[in-house]
Image (tube, rainbow, N blue to C red; front, side, top):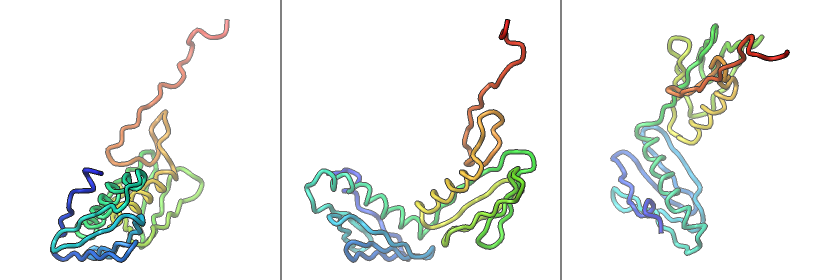
Length: 183
């Protein structure tokens, strides 16, 4: 049995957790999140604690026990505090603007790139090169950040592109002139 899955989840005040097999729903000031769990995973809510229980002895279902507990915990944190993910634009002339549920970026292409944000994710741009994504759903936030980074990933020679805040790009050396080739 999972050690992580055995730990009870503390439910803060103002958050409501409800379970109707196989869906768990978490409501709070940050919104409402719903997640479908495996058939053998149950969530028991008692007072201000939620306990994730595995009812199967199947090894595959045992491996989902800790994962399910972490997913429910992430949902609770998401509706109370929310999650943020930072991205940086690196390159001459690279800039971004946020307007409503859309990011417009100039990334060295012949045209500006418009990136629609999914429902529940908001973006803020500071200094034209730092993008901060915010949302209650950790999975959707990470997926959106990855799709945004994929528009122009950092290239290995100069490091230009979209990178996560704090990400270190190892640069390649490149070619050197007159290095003993040919004759």
